[in-house]
Image 1: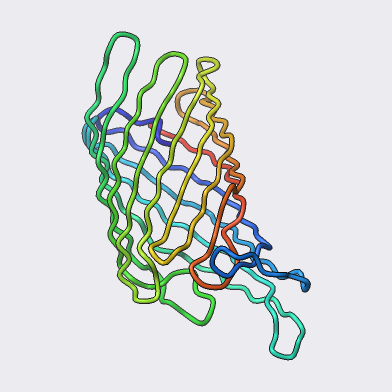
Image 2: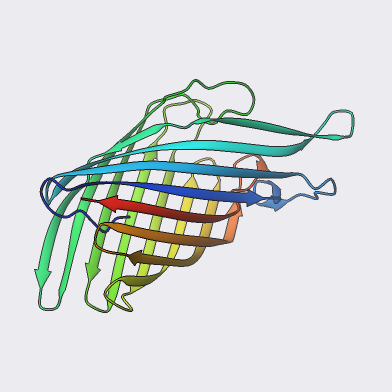
Length: 247
């Protein structure tokens, strides 16, 4: 949950359930009529782990399991529901951070080289993965006091598949530590594809530390602006609920 561990030899695991839903059918930035009630939903189970070699160096692994389904139009004029389940790509990252401590605050600047490895083949017309190895890089910044948290991250992914577009994103987080165990955040995220796709969403996040071992987080993001690279459903609103433990 990007909070801990910050000590040598620390490790943890977390599980997030994410729900995405959209009935917004678009061609580029133009919204299309949807009289048949077509839609697309995704439920993503995020399995994630971290190990800290040194306070400034750690490794993370993220493996999402996707259940996706959509109602689509048939050539005969009716509709049908298509679905597919499976593991998406395994993302391995090596966050490298320089921590700073000042009068009443702490924080870091960091870089994060990343790689996405396919664990399942690209299958059928509705795959959960494009089946390629992709490379990413992030730059991160955070400053925290006893009262507030400010953080941001910028990420770019170099997609290797011919049918996919390279993607860049920016995430801005403003948080309030309302007591020793809880924090309320407001997060805004922008994701853009080189081919024209866009997703801009914002919303609240509640983080709770139960006992310095177990913690929980719930996030909701409401779409502000979105478009697709070709013709299809937008990403839509998202809800994420997760728990984690750290040692």
